[in-house]
Length: 345
Image (cartoon, rainbow, N blue to C red; front, side, top):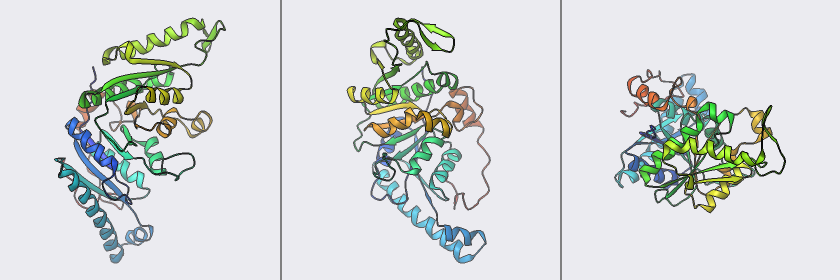
């Protein structure tokens, strides 16, 4: 049974986005289904203004306030469009560069349970549909990050959770359970079918015997699939996902997940975002990054529990209880902090 709750949904609005961005529409409907609070956040910055304002120039301080206020007006206009649909929406503007750092600071200070960003710009980075802000948020987010790609939203009829209980880092970090917990929460809220996918190693059906599955550990190739299925079934047992709702497919994980998402008509793919060094990403690549780039539907990246807003936590339930009873002291204002009082929690 999942203990994960989503009580605060933060939407990152890029300053150049106008109209009603896709991510705000998706987030508003999700927040309503989850009974969660909703906030729109944006980061603005001007290096010349910042340099002069830091030295206390009155004109620069006034210019900074005008820049913030102009963006606040735009956010309020977006928020009002959502309020007209019945949503309760707060707004927050920060003066900070890079923009992703401002969004991350708001996510931590507000203790967001879900961060939502739109991914629909092309040609800004070779071979991807992601801006640098998107990439940085993927790697640094303190909470689950929803990348909105599909312009349509009808409640995510099918949610596909990608798990890998055989991965040693996934097992020790608890990321698979974090993936299943938030997947279960969203599936209940949206009345979705929850499915799971696991990529078998490419030697699973090899004719060679025995196969070294770990240093010094050998296993008959015929038994490898059964071992993986047992590990997956054991992991999914407490989340209401039946064996027939699990796809075990041999192949490269990113390709397996993308193909399964297409075959099962998934509207949302949920995948763990393990923390890797830059060298590891350069050599091995990243399954989460590849999935985020390749699948056409929305993607939810879930960091390991240790990377969530409450640092020392032994479980998601304990973290939620701690967050409710021990909020951090408010920071002193700075050029990177909020201009104006924060909305009431």
